[in-house]
Image (cartoon, rainbow, N blue to C red; front, side, top):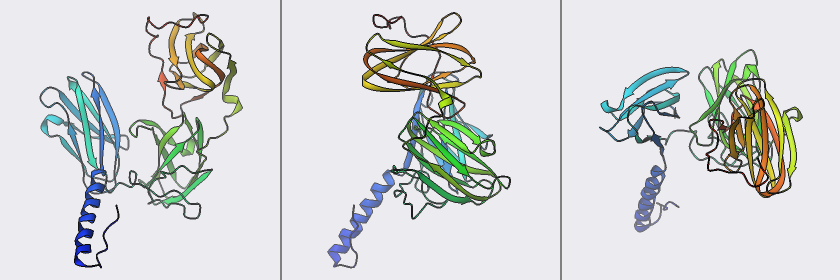
Length: 362
């Protein structure tokens, strides 16, 4: 909405004032962040991050008062700051700058909840202009919200312990790498990766142990680079259109001819928490994946790749994997990694008994 020009006649002045007030009201309506969900039972919980740029930041909760006993735990820098019984007050104050992790949990009962807070002064959530190669953002700039056409390099400097820089990676491909450069030895920089829901922490990494962060599964990732010790300049380089998958990570490739056709392969997970990502292309492929123990072929899960491309093998061991078509045809590629951030489908239970495979698929 365009503001009125106050230097014109009195009618123009009045119109300008009204337009300005409407603009501010419209802007303010979009400067409240809101989280929410449903706690299913006693001990159920949900966690989301809140960035406080400075001053006191109130977070207000709504929940079925009287019917449940909901509490909130506040964590910062890995330490619990405080715990609150929401029956004693539905607003908590974050009094220092930094990233807080808010966990709402049930000591009794189930119900819907929501949490809202003012984000008018939070650089991590304000709109930003598209990145320009001639004007790279400084550490105080808003995050990258546009989708660049090619490789992007962000640069700046962390001023000291606790300082941070936040940006967004709009990953257009299933595999994107971020390469960091910083003053090794003179500082200790870490990276926190948050998922597309802007609340799930997918990983927290010490760059002293490796300067490359791998993002799997595509979509938006929210990155916070922060200093645990020291200060210094940094660069972060990535290509949202994708990075080349290391050949050593590819465990299977093939073609599915049509409904009932399948490919199968064995995989030895030598550590806990190994993930496999499936890339599929073709004519409306409806591809599914069955995962079994290799020794006794006990079925661990049957997954629709349209609902998620990543399967998480939570325990080390030998697995037998079958990818098959319920409809459509096309090619596939499967590759694995361990411990990298992604949105995952966990192997928790076998499929419901009523689910049956198409003819020709065991």
